[in-house]
Length: 320
Image 1: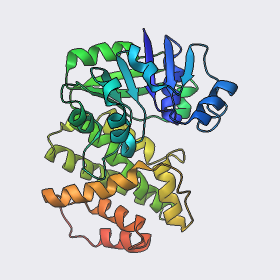
Image 2: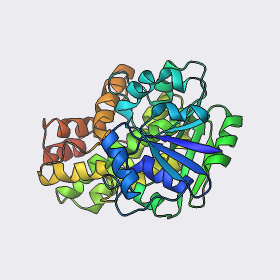
Image 3: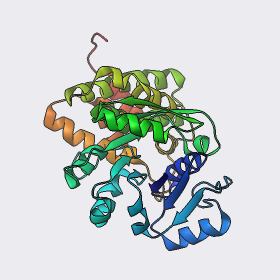
């Protein structure tokens, strides 16, 4: 058996490196120059420098080479997922597709499972999500992730094939909860980064994480998710990691907002698009998401961190 990973960003590369410890892996990148550089140096110098590729990892720019394997990991940014699936619809038809991205599509309000299901109505897509940094996975450090699939039989098979020496997989059929946990925690990480960047302290961050988790749970339950999913790796676990580490790009964006410093526009920050998509969806559903709204206002420079915090503190007092 071999595995194909579509997308040679940091996370896709890290998964390929970990999986290559047990089987043959092909890693696909759309950019020829990127492929050539990885082949030459046997590492991803652009996205994951300093981590050499195992012998079992091969890099390709030929998308059609994935046709020989049934299980494909889709490690592309959420906002690019639809275009990749649509462009390669014929090759991907009939495959087991495992989304490895977190977020909500800005144009439609859909998560990765819904996007895959719309393009491939007969597919049984899965989602790999949870608290993880690419550098940790690539360097062999222990990581636990959630594998979500509505077809539990397929989920069990994927759990066995994708589990590695340093990645332990836990299984769930609650794809909605897993999707929303992984997406919404990015929004809260931006908020927490802004608080720390502005010098408002760890107590304020703890309050935002807790009330942010309440927002995550509120939306997830309204969309049909199970509370225990949000309390697990794909919700609370990912929230704890992303809101407390400088390695998180969403947290870094928040830091730059709080410090009033520029942020590199070339860096993919899924939480920014997700926050905007969430506000549109929650307005339609009549859900109150004040922290998410504050994040959107901060990103759009409609308010300052001081004003946003004052507005949150001035909200009516209520039971927890």
